[in-house]
Image (cartoon, rainbow, N blue to C red):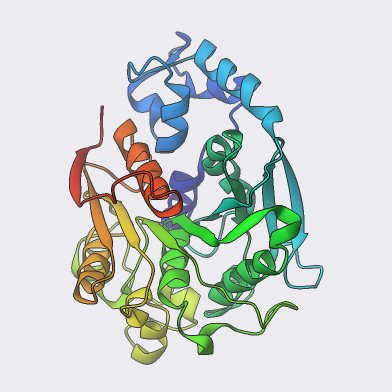
Amino acid sequence: MLLASLFYLSICTCTSLQAEPTDQFKRRDKDRNGVLEGQELNGIPTDLLMRLDQNKDGKVSSKEDERLFNQARLRYTVKTFNYAGNQNPRQEIDVLLPRQSSNRPLPCLIFIHGGGWQAGDKRQGHQQLQGYVNSQKYVGVSIGYRLSNEAIWPAQLHDCKAAIRFLYANAQKFNIDTARFVVFGTSAGGHLAAAVATTGNNPKLNGNVGHHLAEPSKVAGAISYFGPTDFQRMDDFPCRFKHDAPGSPESRLIGSPIQSTAGKTQAANPITYIDERDPPLICIHGDRDDLVPFNQSELLTLALMKKNVPTALIRIMDGGHGGFLNPEVGKVEAQFFNAILFNSAKFPESKTLSNRP
């Protein structure tokens, strides 16, 4: 059961994050009618579904699939860098650079992948970033980090911070505006995105990874998609498996059962570090998530509100662990980016959205 849950945690947040060629479309098209609909859409990330469904009918035709990827592939380049100064492929970032040159530095969207801190890959972020980079208005970055079978907490946070410091140090090379970093992630990546945002004012958590230790790791904003925030409260609600168990993803992350070592567990909670200087942070979460319970985003949002940190909770009614089908979810994401990075939109307010259009 645990292995199945971990597999699900990885797949449901990551499936179809990379560009889907025609053969993957065909595998999803179970009834072979040339249209993805209903259950065939499950697992497709919201932003990708929005771009695929060009006529907004809640379905994706094979023509829409081909049209998107034929147009999208050539509008940016991808370069890979090791931010730790070693040969570890887990400590690398992919930088997605728009092909069109800009006279001004561009904002940078930083994605952190999910997978229970035990699975996943930085390539999962390409599709999450693709539409934004294709607009030629953003640089995109997807972070790889050491998984819990290689190193326990806080190695994952130290890696993410080292990657961001690398971006600060190479901002001119990548044409990045360092005042306009926003980090976002799904599931375990949502946890890490929230941790990056809430620890930006805590130098003790910077770690010593990489060669740019004098650079900051602060960001201008963050989005946590269904990420854990308070490990010891996860079993307050029914889930597919017990998070308190010794073999749970959270216990493996910190190296011991989460309820037996309160100090170590609390040190891995983004909620622990909130202060009034933190950047805006919003949460997007399905209220029927049976892997990371909805209360995790509720708890984080409440804690941020108490410290007067700009925040919002976007509840996806009948939504599970990702795979949201309502294009309005992606619009909230874009609204947040526009509000933080361009001052061109109103900051999102807490709301409930249906999981379906």
